[in-house]
Length: 563
Image 1 (tube, rainbow, N blue to C red):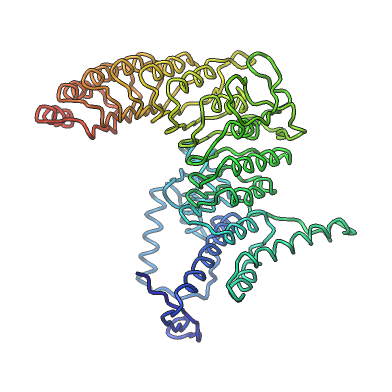
Image 2 (tube, helix red, strand yellow):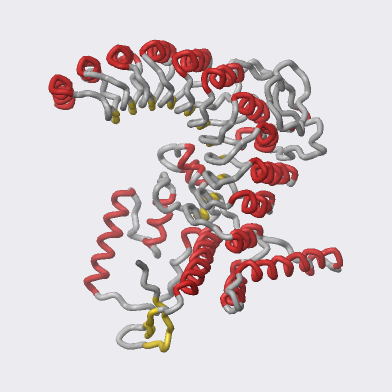
């Protein structure tokens, strides 16, 4: 149980150190406490994100010289810590006026971690770190670096959705956040919806007044914060939230590169609002999104058609299908079968006006658990265009079956206008839990093997009812690729399949992660695998949970680990 406390600052003190005196009391009305806590929590997250996007690593450094004096021992300890960190980073702080800031900037030039705090440069986008780091940044790390707003796993109410929208669109500047909260908290019902509506109406009046402005200096321009990453996953915003928030997609924020609205209970209606927002972003010549996570929502055929076009960085009017026909929109939300692909003759100008290099387009797309059909997938991929710089595609848990594999294979085996493979940069593919069976996985791996110019580094085929026959085809077809990760867990490959995997390992010298968990593998398969691993030094992660080890398998594993 929670104990809610109300705190009130009653006085300030200067001695022995500067500080404040706070009186705390237990809150009697817990409902009020919950409302105040939620409103202030969302507001504080917005404030931190906006300050990070505007000031980057400088936030919190301007504390002034009149703060609490550290003792001599603490100063020595801090100095030793800074020198040690500088030595590890290989930099010289002997002539530095601000060693802490120099260390922070040096650290910001390295790789960022997805699970931790996002490092930000002054610009907030992290582009410089990706170029200047000693080690090239992984695509996932790159797309999740930069100034970020992370509201994941917070179930947002209607008022909170409107508040987030006001800030992200620039209709509410961060310095006006305090007055809005004061207005909401002092209303009879602490009505955040009414407060946000009032500020929205005010911004509309200001924008309409621009038409009567006598000079540019009199105009009021929206200034959205330059956030690079927006994470709204598991917020349950639904269709209403997506319709409301779609406005920030075409706000004047060129820094935005990644949007995560995974598992937000969005139906096709809300997804269409997402598509419209992305198309308006293209019309305004803003850079396209590089990462989009929409897993756990519903993608209908019409959504797939519109989404493919909206995410494409190519001029839609010049796009043609595999048979040379010009692509066109359709308003039919029935079965997509028989339709070549999404098209754009009815786009009415809603095409991507972005003129930069196509390599700046979509790089990461997660569509797991979206109920997307094979025909819809084909339509979406065709809409993206053959030259889309997509690097990672995740389609897990969509129950596509062998037919889904066939549709994906048909697309992957096509050629672009310059006779190059479609999606020329795709190197990570997740088709787990799609009920592909041996037939479907065999077709898919055969298509991958034909893409000799596109090196696959990660393939996930977990939970696809695959037996030893499917494994044989996979291992034979993927030997030419420099695989780093191969996930085959939750199938039924048995000892025979495990032996086939073991026989192929010496030929895949780049493989570092292999997952064979829950595959009905017995002692014989484990022993064979362990013998193969003795001469395979690249493997650093091996998953064997859920298989039968017994004594002989354990002995073989112990011998291998000892090597």
